[in-house]
Image 1 (cartoon, helix red, strand yellow):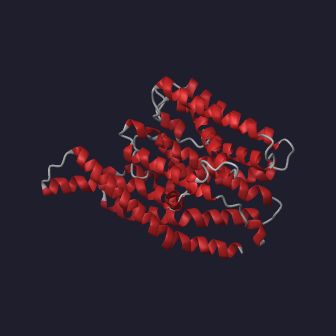
Image 2 (cartoon, helix red, strand yellow; image 1 turned 60 degrees about the vertical axis):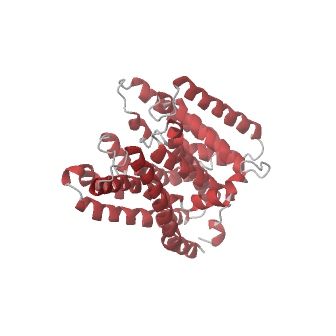
Image 3 (tube, one colour; image 1 turned 60 degrees about the horizontal axis):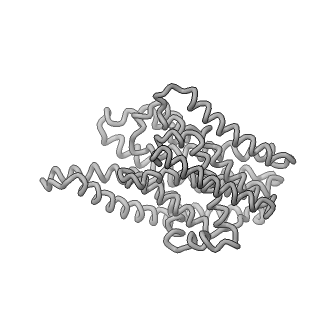
Amino acid sequence: MSAPTLKEKYYPSLDGLRGLAIILVICFHYLGFITFFRFGWMGTDLFFVLSGFLITGRLAPYLSNKNLLSVFYRNRFLRIVPVYFSFLLMFFGVWIILSPADDNHFFRQNGWTFFLFLQNWFMIADPAASENHLQHLWSLAVEEQFYLCYPFLLLLFYRYKYFMAGLITVIVMLIATRHIFVLIHPAGLDYRTVYWNSIFRFDAFLTGTLLYQLNTAYEGKYKQLIHILGIGAICWLATGILIYQSSDLSNPFFSMAGRSSVSLVFAYLLWLCIKSDYKFPGKWFETRWLAFTGKISYSLFIFHWPVLLFGFAAMNKINDAAGLQLHGDTIRWITIIISLIISFTASYFSFHYYETWFLRWKKKMNS
């Protein structure tokens, strides 16, 4: 594949958007015991919308290139697998061996699914057992399943005249399927059955695709429509939260229409960031600290949750062994602060001294 085929339009503000996404996720995991921060789960949806937008930009202009698929999957492998597999090998090789057998039966039975990016389906089958150190990796499985299927769908349908109409139809069908599933299911439906389900999450990725299409093939033509959809989604999201008095994942609003409004809000935010005629919020997302956080967001996503759980276990043991008699809230805040420092430090070194090596290799092979 020639070098021009691999060129991607770079939007500096998107690093900041990734930074916002991972900050939201960390707030949800680290500060979810505070009501205000329970909306942080929405950061995952921002990642999904970003992925749909960016992956379409990497594929759609070059569909005539016969090497596109092989290069795309190779690039995805080099970006995703090295850090992820290294983490899994360390986790399963050290923690599982040292932990009691009755404390890790889910991993012993289903550990292989994490290496095949199938873990979300097995977590749905046993949600209680899935509340563990690797619970957050469900979304990585959903992303990889999308990456596996999506390029073939673009190759088959993108060139058709009615691609946009078909795309909107698929998004509506996915949303309708999610609604029907929730409505016909018994009252005791576990929200995670919907939240971790790949089929019920693909509309977020395709919302990113829709934004890409509106921003390129129809540049400027639907500017007013994007404003209307974005502002309407913000109002709809706020209304749902006010009616149910909750931004929790367990809020039934987010198992149906609310999830779609979140995707539309983030698509609107993404659009505002990439349009040069809007200084806000694009310039704000180009700030150094957000861009830095965005660049290390992949490792930060993988590390932050298990670091927190291991940190809690370690702090409680230290408290008991040393007879410190620290209050539970004190232990919690000390653990959060230390875990944040460890997660950011580990992610910084992972990006600059491990991930970057594979990124340079990828760039060299693409040149």
